[in-house]
Length: 238
Image (tube, rainbow, N blue to C red; front, side):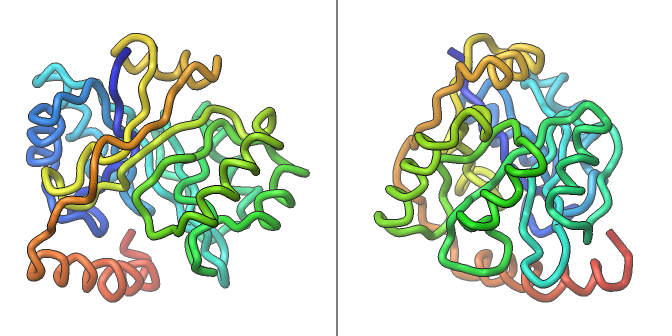
């Protein structure tokens, strides 16, 4: 079984590592595949893919799209060649990902926040219009035991419309947080990963406890995420 961390960020959005640092950390962690999913941009996607090829690491190009205000729910697009526009309704964003042959994935669902995370009612309304290709049933975002159990029940009830069960670390810090949640799949290549997603033969799991991130680095990342990135989005610089 190959091991993938299909939810990773770089300095193109609010991550704290360069493409080279991300690929190096993934190789050091023993991963077979990563997906580069910066927020609302694919500026570093091709560089990560090219560096991955040089290092023997499979890379899926994608992005994490911010959907319409006020919820601005996040949605992952995998296997993309071109960026997907942000600021559109969730169902329209799923359709736009599918229009270019990509796969639409629900990241970190049911978090205790209105912003960014798809909630149960919202997800049910989405599934009335559009099917998705995968959902993160294992992730590292803050979520208590009750919400995790609710997610597992939700997937058991609606899995036919939710696609494959996947895990991802939502890595922003490279070696500090990469691979804490992963997706196992038969094979090791980008094509193998896509085949496993479509066939729903993936396995999501955690690999360990969160590692300590230096406070200064964490503070800088939060500033990038909560201040710099929204300003760049408002100014049309993403």
